[in-house]
Image (tube, rainbow, N blue to C red; front, side, top):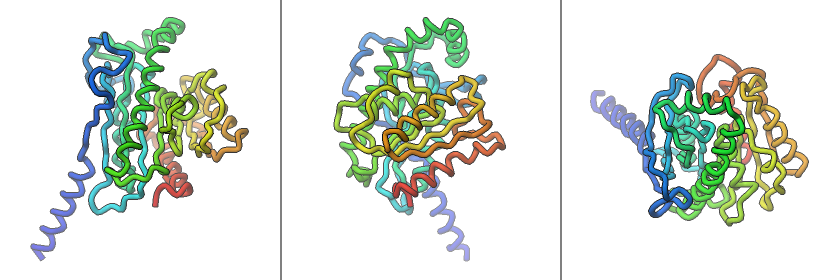
Length: 295
C-alpha cells in the first residue's frame, strides 16, 4: 500500500512539474526590426489597478511555450495567446499564462506572446496609461506605430509555430490565435492584414476593439472560424466593436460564434467575479470541440 501511495505521489508531482514547464523562444535573431534604438528594459510588477501581474517595456518579443503534459493526449492543436493591456503592458497571467496552462492540460500546445509595447517611464504602467488617456489624441498618436510592430510580432509568432509544428506534435491545419483587448487587435491583424502564408486557421477575440480601418479590411481568403466574447458593461465601451466583428464574419459567410455577457466589465480574462461571464472559457472549449480542435 505504501509503495502504491508513493507511486501516485510521484505521478502527481511529475504531472504538476510538466504543466509548469516552460520554454522561452526569442522571435527575432538580434534586435527586432523597428525597435533598434529602444533602451527600455523589460520588467514585471503587480498592478494594484488591474489586480494582476503585468509585464511592461517589452523590446524583445518572445513566446512562452506550454507543452502538452506527459500523459495527456495531444490534440495536434496549437494556439498563440496575445494578452492585452492597451499596448502599454501585458496582463501576463490572467490573459496569458492561466489560459495557456488550462489549454495545455486539455491537449493543446499554447504559446503566450509577449509583443512590443509603448515605453513606460514609471514602475506603474497601468496608472501611467490612465494618465496618458486624459489626452486621447496624443495617446493614440504615440501608440499607433507600436501597434504596427506588435502586429508584426503576432505574425512572427505564427510563423514560428508553423515552422516548428512537428517539434510540438502540432498539425499545420490546427494552428490558431486568441487575443484579449489590445491582444485582439494583434490577433485580428494576423487574420485581416497578413500577406504571409502563416495565416491562423481559427481566431478568437475577447473584449477586443479593433480599429475601424482594420474592420474594413477584406475577409481573409482562408475560411477562418471565429469565437467572439465580451461584456455589455465594458468600461471602455468596446462591446459594439465585438458586434461589428461578429457581423463582418456573419456577412462574409464565415463560421462565427458570439457570447455577449450582461456584466463582466473589461479585462475579466481568467479572473472570477461570481458572474456568468466566469464560464466564458468553458464556452470557448465547447467551441474548440465543435471545431474538432479539442477532444
